[in-house]
Every structure is written in C-alpha cells, then in structure tokens.
Image: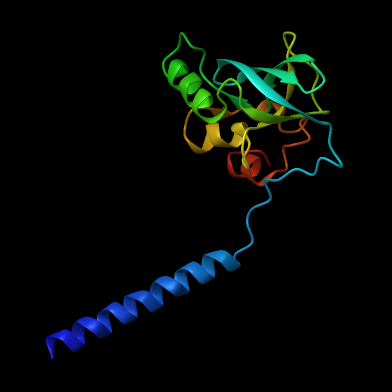
Length: 159
C-alpha cells in the first residue's frame, strides 16, 4: 500500500511539473527585443566596461564608440554600489564579448558618449542592470528615449 501511494504521488508531481512547463512555454514573452530593420544597430565587441552604465565598443567597421546606457543610472565607481555595478556589467558584457549597440535616436550624445541599448546576449544590459538592482531607471529621459515604451522601461517607471 505504501509503495502504491508513493508511485501515485510521484505520478501526480510529474504531471503537475509537465503542466507548469507547458504553461510557461505557452506564455508570450515580454516585448524586450528590438528589430534592427527599424533601428540603427551596430555589431561589434565590448572593449572596456568603464562603469556600470558606460562601455567602450569597437564596431565591426573599426569605429570606437563610448556608449552610455539609455534610461539607466548606475552609481559611480566611487559611490556605494558603483564597483558592484561595474563588476556586474563586466560579468554580462566582458571585454571581448560580441555585442549589438542600438542607438537611441531620441537622445543626443552626452559627454562624448552615444546613448543606447547594449545587448551581449538576448537581453539588454540596460534591462539586466535594473532587474538585478545595480541601477535605477532615469525617468527624466523616458519621454525623449525611443526605448521608453519597452516593457522593462514601463515596468521600472516610464509611463
């Protein structure tokens, strides 16, 4: 009797697990992807992570670009949390990482830095910094940035 109860329990757990996996596959992922046919996208590699929200990038065409991540503000390296933000950014986009830079056409360059999104994987570094509490949304730019309507920007305070 005990073995039969154990077998039934295991079967129920398996069925529930399969149901959870099937449900999560069926949910539409949030709109975090960017269509490079409609944006100004540049491929290249990260050459340096300057701080949590600034990277240096070398395009495939040989152009060096300093990039300030759009809509996020990480602490400066000398401020509390600043070094942790830099280390986190390096863990996601280490020097030598293939990446895509997407220019924010709604914002002007700042301190010789272009403004935009940086992808070193399927998710933008901008979003990852917010998701992992290494940056805050800089809502002053929500109205100007063409990325202010992305799901992650809305989630963190753009409206």
